Amino acid sequence: MRITGYRTLTTVHRWGRPIGDANGCTPAGVTTVPLVLLETDAGLTGVGLGSHRGLDEVFPAIDGEDPRAVGALYDRMLAQVFKAGHGGSTFGAIGAFDMALWDIKAKAADSPLWRLLGARDHVVLGYASGLDEPLDDDELIALHTAFRDRGFQAVKLKGGLDRDRDLRRLQLLSGLYAQATVGRTPRLMLDANESWSRKEALGYVAHLEKSLDLAWIEEPVRRWDVEGHALVTRAVRAAVATGENLTGLEHFRPLLQAGSVDVVQTGSVWGITHFLRVATLAHAFDLPVSPVAYNANPLAHAAVAIPNHLATEVQDLSFPEGVHADQEFEDGNIVLGESPGLGLVVDEDAIAASAPSAGRTGSESQHVRPESAGKRMLGADVHVFAIDRSVGVVCR
Image 1 (cartoon, one colour):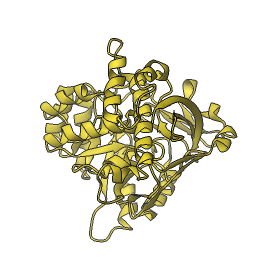
Image 2 (cartoon, rainbow, N blue to C red):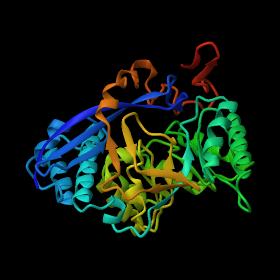
Image 3 (spheres, one colour):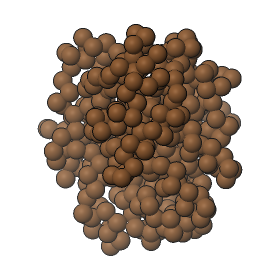
Image 4 (cartoon, rainbow, N blue to C red):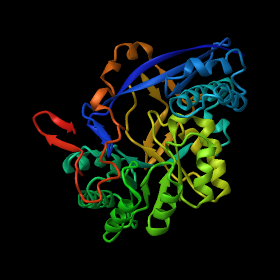
């Protein structure tokens, strides 16, 4: 079996609500979802999710190769961009191809990927996370009621801009999820998305920890700040989680060696091989791993196969248009099915009828770091979102 080419598609995910974090929001609640279809001469097609940027530069490394040699092909893709570097969107292209390669490998074995990777079970512990910073309190409760009703007992709030608002909302979520838990307190996390300086992080978390316990604080400082993460880790009760934006083992190693992280995270768009390698590195330091979510939860298949998986983020209970995923959400878990590969079926007719142009564009784009990030120590410019009931959520 040989790789013969690839095609790209773009669909949309309709969230049914505004989504966002400390760095911006998408008021329309519609985001684009890039798909990569990797084709073979055996008639098997692998599905990958992630960046379309850099695919042409990376593809020569795998063109004509046997797609089942996933680990070797991953290293060939890294070597292909050795001089220019594999960071950013290029790493996303490698991740998309890698995901498609694993999909083909499992399909060729007529096996779901979780079983091919050696998992004993297909039930993946999850936690609820709704990209919910733009929502008012009533909308927040409505969203998380749906998660609670699916049995989730841990929840992550997007925040980091207003500590009193975050405290109130965390307490609201604690009360909401406690209604469905018997004999246990819901676990709470807060994601600051790199919006604080070191001292802001310490003061912010100290304020919250006067009133509640946090399971973890996520990305309190910049992703590369080893000393800053170490400072926060040693000063607060909560664990520190980070890593979703790191691309390659060389970025993780300094954090782990310095004791700067308690929960090691990886982004789903960076692929399955990256996740497996980071999980092995973390395991050597006796640290747990928690994948950050993406459409159709592709890393769930790998998460259930490693010994140090903690929980997988679940951002929504639905899937992109034209993408069917063989998985369910039950009792706070992602329950993976028996379909071969990643269990993803792509309906190209449905995708053709969708509107990919409605995604992240221009000033409405999520993840645009504001000038005030890390410079709010005096309390100025703490509100990124305004709520105008006539037009919905407005990004400032």
